[in-house]
Image 1 (spheres, helix red, strand yellow):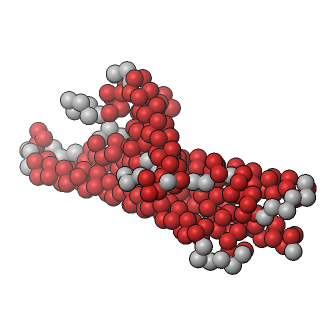
Image 2: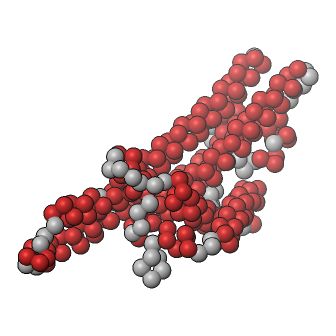
Image 3: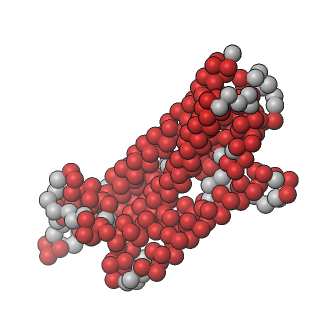
Length: 295
């Protein structure tokens, strides 16, 4: 906000292309640096004492800032409320100009950015699994006697820090009934890093509807505080019930916006975790299938 202006008004008045470039490029640089840092840590954990994370929070904030600016840059052209219908009420809530509206939009895009980064990692995991399956099939056709552990250790050293590698390694270990081996401990360690990242996202999700309720409470408090003046203002300042009700409707926009953002974010995260669970099952299945064929 600047001099009482909403961020939408500021974005419409001031060129924001430099900010768009800085936040987008910065988010990608931070995300790449985080992935490389985690990969280095995973290869040599004793040589790095600094805290590492599997997903970069600053990267999510930078990308969330970029998406927020894009949202406020595009909404005046894409979304224009007209009649008081359901879709128009939703549009009006999305382009509201209060600080709470902006906070909800920004927080929503930070969560979306975190999910997008996790989805990119999941795509890499899927590629690793597909590559492993092709390598195993190639070894089988060539008549090679190498076991799955050797193939994974020799051919996939470049992706040792990925979740797919850890899942495959753990599945191979489980197939060999070595439950307390280093591979299983590595898989548990990787899962710990991933859970820590998800705790952050899940901690942000409840803030979306709570911010919406906060905006509504602030609006209602302001409206109620003005009622005595309207009721005692005399004939020349008659209390306008219709205007007051219309104002109260606007106050509930933040609640609507927070609930919509929460639902979309929750569905996106649950879909991603469903796909990740399917990946873990696929890793165990491919190891089991190869083990049965080799019997």
